[in-house]
Length: 207
Image 1 (cartoon, helix red, strand yellow):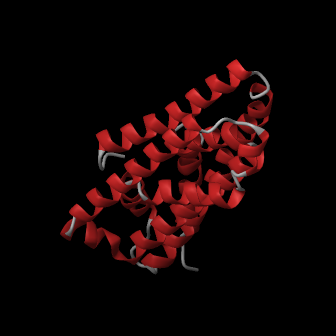
Image 2 (image 1 turned 180 degrees about the horizontal axis):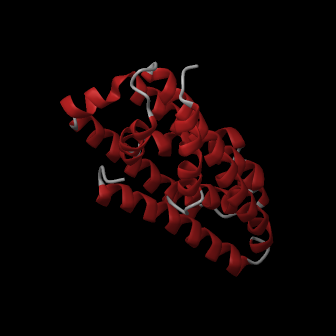
Image 3 (image 1 turned 60 degrees about the vertical axis):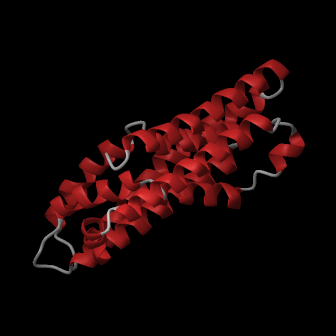
């Protein structure tokens, strides 16, 4: 068996407590839900979870070595993420939430956005490098354990974030019926994206 069952059972409540705590990823899924509806929110949550799994896989493959030897790489990745979130904020603010514009927000695009936002946030990979090794048995295959733990984080995170995003997605169409509420909704959603960009920019590699 590639993983210690007792360690895994200890890991489950710890990671569950983490994924239910509101954070940037949950706010992103909810913002996408407000912007494009329930399907878009679920797709965004799936993209975020895919990013978490990729990060865990890379960490298990030895990304810690890269972090130690070339920390500037993560600086570049971080600013790419900041720029992308700023673009999403601007795009949301300048695009009215009419039926026509909402049709352009496809689930595949929301998935891509969630994936990019997760992968371009170095805090995620540093968190994984700090958190998962606490539950790794060094006598067993390290890579397999990182993948299993990463998949668990991805699945539990998807369940929580898609639920929160779907709830926001139900509110979006109702709010968009009023021109004033529609403008407010765009400002709020754009502000969330902008705040996430600022957080990534200011916190750097802090988890």
